[in-house]
Image (tube, rainbow, N blue to C red):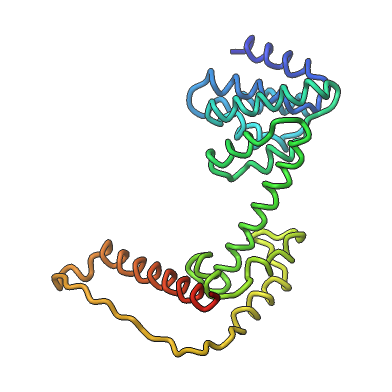
Length: 242
């Protein structure tokens, strides 16, 4: 094991510079593929940290190394694409950072979009914008009391367009600026009055009384009512706009 680690250290050290990202990523992948269990992470840490002088990239290296074969093949393709044009320049790491937290299927879709070096920065920004918008959606849904984003769209006009004004701000689930909270509260407080009086629709289903408290049945009833309400509101909205 010691001799194997020495080989990895030599290979990582032979990168273009000590801050390079491609070399450690490839070596981390090799360790992951040839190891069993979680011991590979300790091996990667012992190799990369002394070379790079920091553990800031370790979590990203772990994630990249553990991707399925089809995803890492795309990552390797992008590495090669970059090195063919920039032999003395480090590849931007923002792309790989922004891929964190996405489902593998979505990750693969974004990587497929990169056909040339110039696409790397473009796709990085596209992912970043998409993730920020998703955070804004989640914050709005939670603060407004809506069950889903679809319900929010049906309840509040132009909410998606209005949230765009917050795209440039550094907003996370842990940091929500007062201006966003005020916007959501004002949106909820102001809802244009409807010209027509709302009508309540009741649907009856006959089942045995002892089954009423069944958790699965209760969930079906709750989810079904919400979905039906959203669909009816969507149809009514479309009818009013036509």
